[in-house]
Image (cartoon, rainbow, N blue to C red; front, side):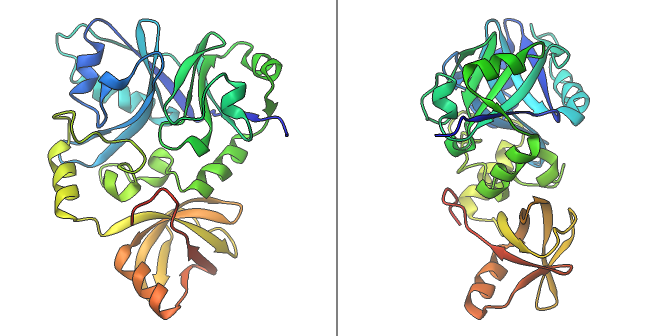
Length: 299
């Protein structure tokens, strides 16, 4: 068996949430149940507008007296600003921990076992002066590790991991149909259920109120989903992000991220069914797109 890989994810940041009210503070804001987070469990969650539209998503793990948010690095200032609006008099301290902590993806055969974890989504444990957890969305996506920036490469290699690139991990992610933050979900427009958050363990409908909860619950119970983010095989050049997806001269969706002949596209469900019946091809510019339903998705 080949050694599993590690890939530093330079586009990810880390926020530390500390203080006695840290759990209650996040519980009223994010889409998942903070009470599930423990030294042995991490979760995936999102922050929405009051109208239920996507703003940010992140992984939440516990480390000593803090909750660590593995978040989109290029938008970390915006996330901190939005969270600080709700602190008020709560005993909560929010800090950008990215100068000392970084995020790596650990993936490939035996990645979880090499990190000392079972292959169960969301399982977490202390690891090399940081924390590692099996991706809470899908165990097949491997392990995420939040580690001190100094010397993490040598520590991972000594543990049995081989260096890879963020692009290698991105190819795995796309093949699994997993969205990557604002690359795939349009800020202030995307709806969680269009992007697989329910199937990917990113929403708890029993936890009580959170920002945007009313629209999210109404969308679920009324069956209002008309579009879905779908993995596509690309025959031809990878289309640019936001390129229109066409079917028989009609725009029925938009491309999101892609590489190496695979990508994600937000597509209208009625036309997915129509194309399956007629055999007509989807296109984006000169490329032909072949949609594929992920094993985990309920569509």
